[in-house]
Amino acid sequence: MLDQEEEHVLPSVEDLTPDTQVELTEDTVLQKRSKTTRHGKHDLWQIGLKGQFLGKAKWYTREKVQENFPHHIQ
Image 1 (cartoon, rainbow, N blue to C red):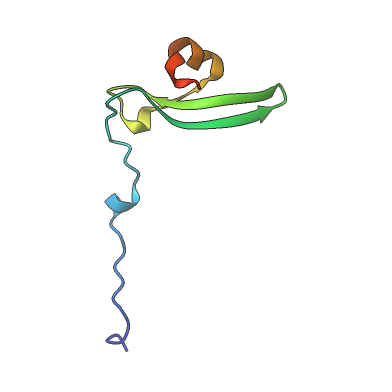
Image 2: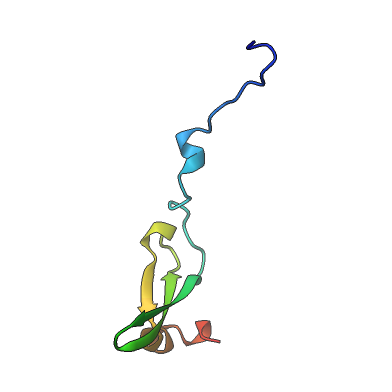
């Protein structure tokens, strides 16, 4: 019975974890999302700074992105 079935190998733990330890070579927008609250709609950007790891990227509001990273707003 085992001879007829294909052997299934589970992926290792390293294959399942995201690459949060990759160091960024430049300021990078990783994600953009909109969040609706009772005060209205807010645009948020997740930005990783040059030299940081992906896991240390932070979320910024439109105002902070315009102030600190104007080249990332389209």
